Image (cartoon, rainbow, N blue to C red; front, side):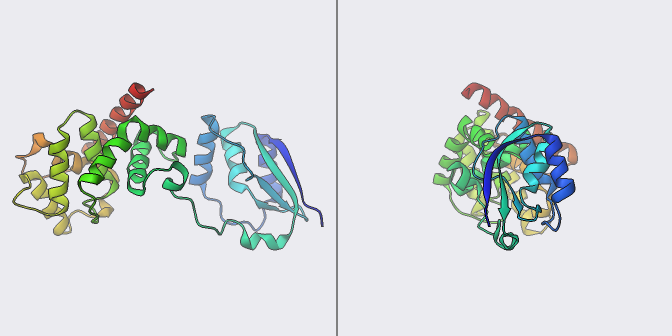
Length: 265
């Protein structure tokens, strides 16, 4: 049995044909991942590696359905290795390794990678690439977030979630006192009620009472965190978050990150 590997320019028509004629018995296609790859192709970020498209000795598509779908969605040709003659038995061992995390692909620390990815999603939309995450991190996010983690590295559900940490970074980027924002974050995370402003106490009560959970959504958490971490809102007693508030919070983050990236360019 002979296996061959050929560098091939795969056109959208070729990708569609292979998906329709040879993609039998494969794993379920994940549309969100195919669209993320397609977005990278459209942005010119595709990098040719050893990963490509593989067919068995019988001509069945064994690996690469997401890459082919991405080429079709992007409607652009891509240079990629095409492997032929792979044993049918290889299917059981393809793609069962450990999935690469954000820190694996960017070199960022775990928590900073989470925050940078969250903010990159605000800036670019879903399916962000490692390049986009790094661009956001290098626009000031990494530096501020690492200082935040040095100030308070405690981990606690909801209180230290990526949206909350990202809110702290955004406020500092927008010119608010780093010392003041970081102190409210740390006091809230450690539930030092006597040190917390009223608005932060309100946030803690919502979490403790079960009125605020991860099910509220990441933009909801971002909007609330932008309110309770903002030193100018210290005297607020209650935090409310409407759909309009969540939308405004996303727009605020998107605008700040865009500005920071322009300044860093």
